[in-house]
Length: 354
Ligand SMILES: *[C@@H]1O[C@H](CO)[C@@H](O)[C@H](O)[C@H]1NC(C)=O
Image 1 (spheres, rainbow, N blue to C red):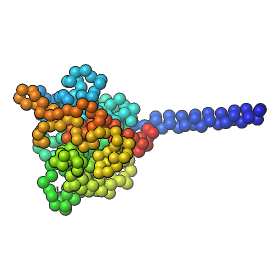
Image 2 (tube, helix red, strand yellow):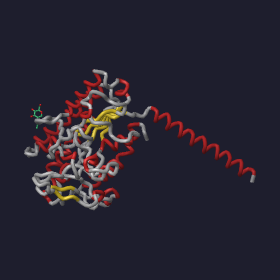
Image 3 (spheres, protein in one colour):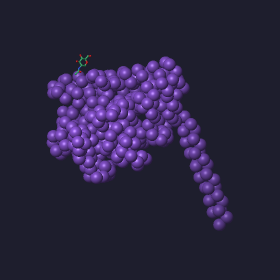
Image 4 (tube, rainbow, N blue to C red):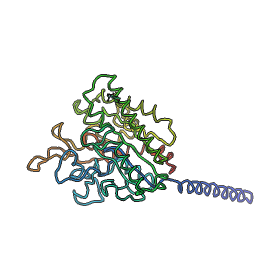
C-alpha cells in the first residue's frame, strides 16, 4: 500500500515536471513568436485597399451588400461589407488569428502609408497581379510601398525583423492571359509569374523579413468563373494545367529557401473542390463545392450587381455555410475556415506559434 502511494507520488511529481517543462518550453517559444503581419497580393488577402466608392461596380462590390453578409459583428449592410471579397473574413484574417491577432492588420489605404501600427499592415490590392495592367497595383509596387515606409522610418527595423509576410498571388495574371492556348506559352507565363514572385520574396528578405508565407496556386480551373460553362460539373483543364505549372516552378524556385514556407492552397482546395476526394471530411461539409453562393445572372456580371432600379441581377443562397465559394472566384468564410484548418499545423510550426 505504502509502496503504491510512494510510486504514485513519484509519478505525480514526474508528470508535474513534464507539464511544467512543456509549459516553459511553449512560453519561451511564444515570446519569440511574431506579432506583426504584412500582407501582399490580391483579393485572397485584401481587407479593403480598393477604395470604397459611391458607385457600385465590379471592383467596388466588396463594399456593398451582400458582401460581409455573415459578419455578425456588425448590424447594417454598410458596416458588414468591409472591403473583403467574402461573406465575412479572408485568408489574411485567418493567418492573423493563428498569430494571436484579432484580424488582419489595417489596409494601407486607411492612412496611405503615413502611419503603421504594431500589428503590421495589409498592402494587398484585390485586382492585383504580378504583372500590372492598367489600374492594377502590382506585387512589386506593394513591396515598394513597404520599402518606402521602412526607409522613412514609419515602420521600424525591429518590427520588420519580428514580422511575417504573406504573399498571395491567386491567378489574376492567368485570367488576363486566358487567350493563350499554346502549351509553351502557358509554361512561359507560369515561369515569368513565379520568377516575379520569387524576386519579391527576395526583396522582402533583403528588407529584413525573416518569415515569409507564399501561397501556391489553387485549382484555378475548378473555380466558378472557369467552370460555370460546364455547369460546375467539370473543371477547366487549361486553367488547372496553368496552376500546376505555376506550382511546379514555385516549388523549384522557393521550395528549399530558408525562411520561406509555401502555403499549399493547391492541396487544401483540391481536397474540397477537386475531381474526386468527396469522401474527405472537409469536402462533405459543403453541399455545393463549385457553384457559388452569390451568382450573377449574366456570366459577365458580378455578385451584388443591380439594375438601374436597384433590382438585384444576382441570386443569393440561403446558407453560405453550405457553399465553398462565395462569388465567382472567392471562398466563403466557411470555405476559408475549412482550407485554413487543413494548413494550420505547418503554418503554426513555421511561425513558432504551435
Ligand atoms: C516572359 O518574359 C519574357 C522576358 O521578359 C518575355 O519576352 C515573354 O514575352 C514573357 N512571356 C509571357 C507569356 O508573358
